Image (cartoon, rainbow, N blue to C red; front, side, top):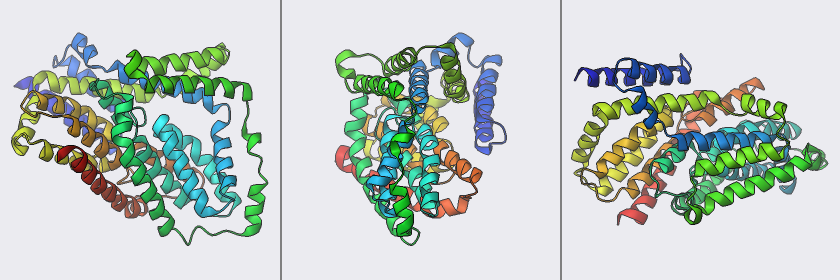
Length: 428
């Protein structure tokens, strides 16, 4: 009982500190994990078994892949090319950049995607003398919606796919991509309508943009060819998981280090990539979370919560799925969705041992709620804060209230759509 109380207190305090952002979330998570071990709530050996190395490997491999590819100028090229294909029409540019962000977020990760897209978005909007805020808000929404579509698009999906081996890369696409595509189309139309007055520019400015040379953005074409080859092989590996049964983490790590080798494998490149492209703070944040949640599992708190949830819904799959969907969305709109999902995964697994017959719709509800819920507020997802920070550095202020007025209603609308989708596809 004492250990149970201690574990609960440590986790709640750790979570509160993460939400407050007074201390870096990595420090908070690692201190929580260390306390769990120092107090004997979980042994070091058992703690290691709770660390999901598949999630960590997948994140690290994709960080390396994207980090090396960013040296080629590919992402700047794509954005400029899209603006020219849109004939420098602001409304079309908003649409094209939104779609590109969604697609990149599905196959890379949404934080990396916005880091690459925001600078070139500012370049284009400055050229056309446009307010960049509509474009930035569209890209925030697109990154979180697009990241929902695949196993590798958003950390919650990576964690769910790693915990449930039956949910393969193709399973995520088959089950989540249809609703994501519909939502993306509708959300872009909503943004075009809301900001139609801001999407006006002068013909002479459009003519100047059309003169931009997108090919000048390509800094290293030899490296680009190698990067595209390795990225293609890696994504093909994800798609064909059911044939070779190689874990997605091993695929990503193979791709990352193969690209480093093909890029020359020099000391400077490897060290620069490992220092500046691999987000070690994020990796250790996950390690701390996995151990902290492991402590809750070991003392039986997760099992108790699962039993209470099953009692609340009577073990009914429909009620449980919709509860998880809406709870995930609301919580993830105001809290970081990663620790929430880390807590929910073992809880849902325990539900399976307590009479809930079909967990699949519950897993998809968790993925949809956690990923889409991130659009609700400015603090709902890491990508949101990254964009706001990059905008502030360039003199554009996106306030919590400004974002909330647009983001929260759109988030609720997408969750209503997800509710209808989950109910019609899995629950009737």
